[in-house]
Image (cartoon, rainbow, N blue to C red; front, side):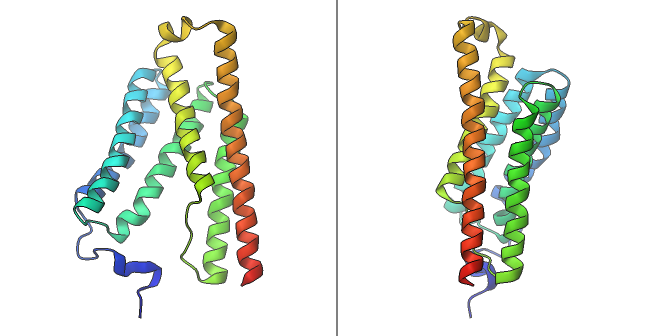
Length: 200
């Protein structure tokens, strides 16, 4: 009989390996990132965010190449990603770099998906909760949004060289794109959840 949640795909003998260590390191970097951002050291915060992105790519690559995929890593990796993104938007709103309503939208969408996924897991006894293409696109847009605002404040000289009208237009476009993709993916997950419950 197949293992629940596809546990047979993972190496259960090793919980601690290079890939999981990188993921844990990324989690530890989150409060460091928040500290730099709150203390006004935006450039340092940008570097830490970049380090988190690099470690995110490396841990997945190493897990596949070294065959170190574990159940712990399977759950810890997305938790680390969500923790970093949630912290980024919350702190960026706290220091008045991005609009508060955008952070509320991003966090509300994630909470909505989390609660919905939990209900489907309980009601349908299903572990097949996968990220959709639109969700992955939204994640990319959110990451680019954070990088954009961090870069604009980390390098004010470069940002100041942009024509004021163009800078405001690009900033508004970034915010609108992030908001739209966040809202659309939230509605999409609602549709998928209702469909699964209807077909149960």
